[in-house]
Length: 248
Ligand code: MF3
Ligand code: CO
Image (cartoon, rainbow, N blue to C red):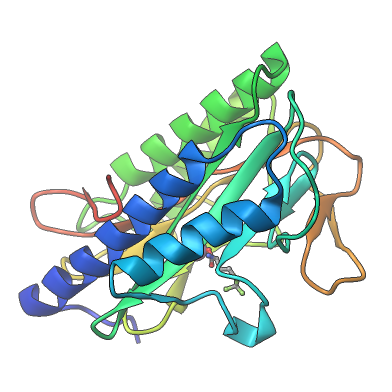
């Protein structure tokens, strides 16, 4: 069963998502050479708490921080710590805020100082893949239409779509039905209905999509050491088209 939210529930979702977006913006603004990933997590954590919300990643399945922070060849679920960011790195921040019983979820990859042209292109393509996935999230369309929009564009650009992680429904829980893969066929999968709220989150690798999990039990890295980027929005399906709830 895919939960459908009432207008009142969507309004609560919107608040949780606006807090999420503001916290991500603050975290992104704190990205600079010399900062540690633990310091970035602190910025995000404080932002979420100061807006009266709860950092929903903290403690989720035992995750030890408010923010998943993944650097360079780390794809998702990196654990913040003493690593110092350096000029040329790319860093993904992925976070969830819970407010009034609902959860928002958003991610973005940021440049640390000046980055290589290839890294710039990876960020641009991943951002655009998200835009295209969202544009496909029309009432009456299917999940596979989103998946296909992301995959076809990404592969045309010569990058690879991570297979081991997907987007997801979201609402009272961080992860609800349905899965929202970043690869798939148009016309396949569950049909989109007004009131559904989903996270669309392309995770895109520079070279190949195979990943492995580090011994910390969380951090997913590309096997070939290529860089990876991640952009995510929480989106409401409406009769008038997709609404980006985590748009700042
Ligand atoms: N925000 C992530 C997602 O997109 C969830 C991170 S896993 C957690 O689903 F353990 F950190 F919460
Ligand atoms: Co998500």
